[in-house]
Image 1 (cartoon, rainbow, N blue to C red):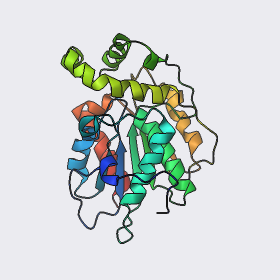
Image 2 (image 1 turned 90 degrees about the horizontal axis):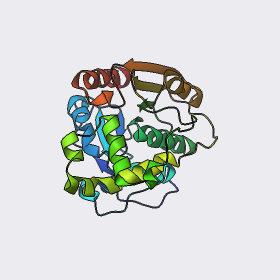
Image 3 (image 1 turned 45 degrees about the vertical axis):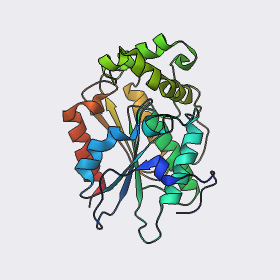
Length: 260
């Protein structure tokens, strides 16, 4: 992997490996969380796949053990940091090809990361984008990041991705809302910039009742690659991925696409 133009970062701050992969694992899967999410969201993926795939999860600043670090409010800057962390993590003696999986905001960060890696001469093996309209589709969401806490809580409640007991706990909200607000700002201010299309396959995953992504917007990811595009629709809403049955199906999809 060639050097990244981003400022050097400590890879161990940005990348989490929950399970050691076997030496024979032939691909490295990098998982990027949704807005307000953390690396631990992908612990079940790592547990299920680490026997065959080297699974890494990205930990954004502003949450969990990085809660004292300022959050990043720009998708492009997040991608720059991820590329820098992956570059710092690369081992010339263990140069497994990369695949990227991102859900919701993580899908945008994964796409921007893939674009940067390709420009550096390191195209990814496959890009999996979940729960997000294509990068080129304008967002129709209000600027929630500039509104009060109640508006953020209402959005989190509507998306059904956060435990309702946590959303009712004011002490918990004081801890999590700053990162949520920063992530919403990153998503809501994102504007796709024209660039060469990816050459890797893109697999789009979406819930059939996701209020934020309609079928045409999900299918539009095909316009971002010269390679094949596959659209998979699962039962559920924006966080269909959290349901055990759908999560297992997605894990099997990843295994079938990445393990040969």
